[in-house]
Image (cartoon, rainbow, N blue to C red):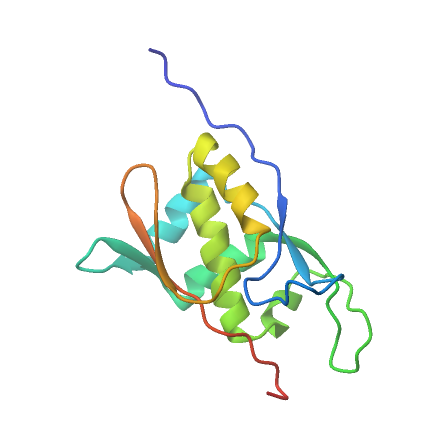
Length: 154
């Protein structure tokens, strides 16, 4: 069988896990899976646990956010004014949301096409926060931990 090159994957909207399911206008992020080259760069910028789970470095997470966040909606600045997305503004997001988004970007980048379709249907459904390990098609795990999102006010 011939080797098939991977094509570009379209970005998709992602709603953070701790959003109130009754919120009619929840925040959402337009996330683009990483290219093969970007994924290899991230994998060289982190470490693997004894269990075989990948943990990206802080610099790796910042690269994933810069490469992977293509837009957002329903995000406000510190004054409650709708904030337009601009490259670099992801640094202003709460740290735990940055971790969640980086994990989602990396997980979707490492999934096969069928797994990606399945995860897209699950990403919009509300989930309760908790610990999880994302396992890719080749069995490699990505260590993830979902934590509640707190703003500067609490």
